[in-house]
Image (tube, rainbow over all chains, first blue to last red; front, top):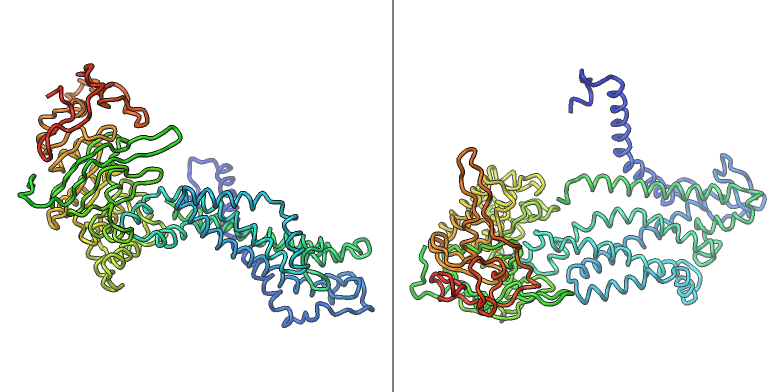
Length: 297
Length: 329
C-alpha cells in the first residue's frame, strides 16, 4: 500500500498526519499484543521452571536473623516474618499456580469441546440433557461446592483441582454447543453428511477444528481466572496449606505483617497481576489473529 | 435422452414419499405423496418456489432429513432396493459413492480449515479406499476435469483463496470423484453470476454425457430447468403439480400453476416499452397452514368450488405428461 508512505496532494497535511499516527499506533498495538503476552508468559514460566538453576533454591529456608527485610539486591521481594526469601517463594509458587491454571483450563477445554460439540450436533433430547447439566453446574455456588469437596479431600491442592474441573468444562460445553448449532447448518457439514462420512468423523475431523478458535481465545482468560481461583482458595485456607509456597498463600501470610512489611503481599500481588496481563495479552492477540484470518467464511 | 426405460429398472424410484416436520405450531408436510422415477443418464428438473420442499425431498433420498423432520410415508427405491431398509453404515456407503450431492452456497460448502486438496483426498481415501499417493494424483485429475487451471498448485489453497465459481467446481470435483450414478444438484448455480452459472451447467452436462450419471437438478429458475432437464417436475407446497418431459411441460403446460410460472417470466421488451411483470397473485403458501384440497386454490384464476375437496393426484402415470388439476387442460 503506497498510500501509507507518501502524501496525497488533495488531503490536507494535518488530516494526513493524524490518520497516519492513528494507523501506526493501531498497527503497533495489534502486532505486538500477542508477542508481548507470549514474552511475559514465557518469562514467568521460565523463571519458575528454572528457579533452582538461577540460584533461587530453598523456598522454605527460614533464617530468623533476616526477618522482614525490605526489597534489596539480595532479596528482590524482601523477606517474610520467618526470614524466607519472598521472590524465591513466588517462583516456586508459580510452579503450582501455572500448572494448575494450564491443566484445569485445557482438561476442561477438551472435555467441554467434545461434550458441547456432540450435544450441539445431535440436538434434541441429548442436547437438552447436557445443557440442563451445564446450567446446573454453572448455577451451583462455587464456594459451597469447594467447601464440600474440601470436606472430602481434606485441605491441599486436590480440592481446587476437583472443584475447578467439575465446573469449568461447562463453560466450554456451552460455548461450543452454541457454535455447533450454527455450524450444523453450514453446507460443508451437510456436504460431509451427503458424502457418507461417519458422524464421529464429521464431529471430530470437520467440526472441532472450526470450533477451536473461540475456545482457545476464551481459554486464555480462563487460565487467569483459574489461577486467581486457586490463589483465592489458598488465601481462604481451602487450597494449598502452609508452608507450601503458593501465590495466594504467600499473600495471605504476608497480610499479617502488611503494615510492617508491605512488600510481601503487595509485590506478590503485582506479580500475579503481571502474569494475568501476560495471558490476557496472548488472548487478545489470538483473537485478533484468528479473527482476521478469513477462516470462518 | 431416453424418456422411457425400455423395460429397464429405474435407477431411482420415489413412491408416495411424505415428509413431516413438527414444530410448536403443529405438524406440516414438507413433501406430500411425491412420486418420481429416474433412469440412467437422465436429468430431472425439480422446479418450485423457495420453501416448497424441494431441498428436503432431495435430502430424504440420502436419508438426511434434518431434525425435527422425518420421512413418514412412502419409499425411496435405489436400483430396486428400499433405502429405508438399509442400516446406517450401508447408507453411509451409498452416500458420496453412488449418490452425491452438491449445494447452493459456494461460500460455505467447503470446510475453511482444510486445503481443497485435503478435502478431495479425504473423500477419495474413504470412499474409494485409495492410498494417499493415488488419491492426490486423482485429485489433480479431477480438478483439471472440472476446469480448474494449474490444479497441482491449487490443491494447496484454502477455500477462502478461491472465487465462488472455483469453489463450486471443487465441490463438484469432490462429488463426482467417486463416479456416482446419481448427482443431486441442489440449486447449484443460484448463488453464482450468470456467466459462471452457464459454465457450471455446461460442466454438469458434459460430465453427465461422459459418465452416464443421472442428475436431479433443483432450482427455482425456470430457464435453468428448461435448458438442462429431460424431465421436469413442478413442485408447489410439498406436492408435485405437474410432471412430464421438459418440452411438454415448458411448451404446453397443463396445470394453472405452471402456466402462471411461465407467464411470469420476463420477456425482452423494446426500448421504452416497460411492461409491469406478470405475476401469480397472492403469497407463496405457508406449509403450516395449507387450505384443504388443492393448495394452489387461493391463487388460482380458474378456481371453482370443487377445488376445496379434490385430492392432489397426478392424472397420468410417469413419465407421461401429468397434471394434478382435473379441471384445466
